[in-house]
Image (cartoon, rainbow, N blue to C red; front, side, top):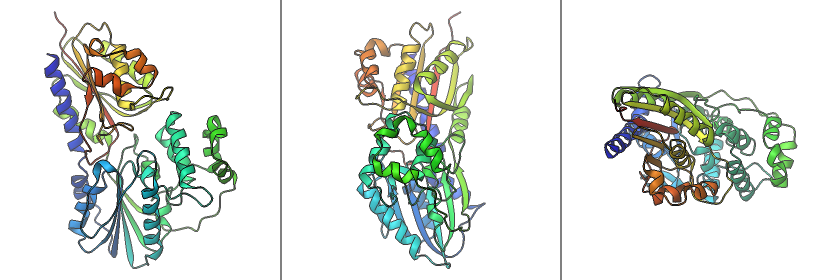
Amino acid sequence: MISGLRRTARDLFDVAVRAADPALALRQSLTKAPFPKGRHIVIALGKAAVPMLREALTHLPDARAILITNAENKTDITGVEVFIAGHPVPDQVGEMAGKAVMAALDSATDQDCIIALISGGGSAMLPAPVFGVTLTEKMQVSKLLLAGGYSITEMNLVRQHLSRLKGGGFLRTKATVGAYILSDVIGDDLRVIASGPTTEPIGTRAQAMALLRPIWGDLPKSVQAHLMQPTLEIPSHPPAQNHLIGSNRLSLNAILQAAPQGAQIVNDALIGDVFDAAQLIAQAARNAPKGAQCLIFGGETTVTLRGKGRGGRNQELALRVAMELQGFDREWVFLSGGTDGRDGPTDAAGGIVDAGSLARMTTPLAHLANNASYDALLSSDDLMMTGGTGTNVADVQIMLIAPKAP
């Protein structure tokens, strides 16, 4: 029974990924929102940049194109300027990409049209630090935010005020700007996705400073000085034509349609610390009716780092759910995975655990205390490995529960 449930869970995860196919999403969007007219400059940014760009170039074969993506989605496209940038911590390649993008924006005329193809992960891949802040210092800030358990909205609010391209930076051009956006953010706030290069900022510098108060003393002095400066007046530019083409909720709906009888979407905004999320999921499992059940969740949780082990939010969530469901009297399987195929700074997409996982696992409590969920799941053969999927619409969780014996 368990092996069958595990196969079903993995099949349903694949359904979620297929539902977030970036090329198909862009193609369908263009029937309602075609590319604006003009001489086209295409900037494809994020984990789904490659398939989105390939699709765009079938419609715009003469366009100039810049591609910025991460190592898992590395590719070469003839005639395209390609940057394989760091993620989740920015690197020098990302800084070079930022300079190339700014040069393209600056050189564009009112006869040109910037086509921005934006997907999750783009915030780290295109750092473009403000004057007075070095890339190394920005990397330090990113590491502090990741370790501090900040939400994606909070992290990107801070990033916007340390970057020349985030929070509307693509609008500082004479060209028309049209953006097609694949959302990895719960609630689909366009200001948050890839730190909103074609939108207004999420908040002010004062709000960023307030968020950073717990780690203020650890921040580089240059970052402190920049955030304490008054916000400069930025010349107004016409807004971008922003189009949302895909999201986590669409993937959850696809799971619901493909799942066995008894499926329901329990929570489509699973956010906050993995400790709380695990308790919520375990309680939903215990409260499930006697028949077979498929409980579906979607969102993006956070992990507060207390140790130095390997792991990611999906792997730690899977480990914590396994612990929460000790003694549960039904057969069950739980999957938590990132639709991009990468969970944190590891090569795993997430984890699949079942009622026997803890018995197969070496020192689960010690691994958890060290944030070493990767090693815990590796020891029980519960890591989910997919490789880069070429898309990114946040995370999905699937809880399958066998019928209760009469």
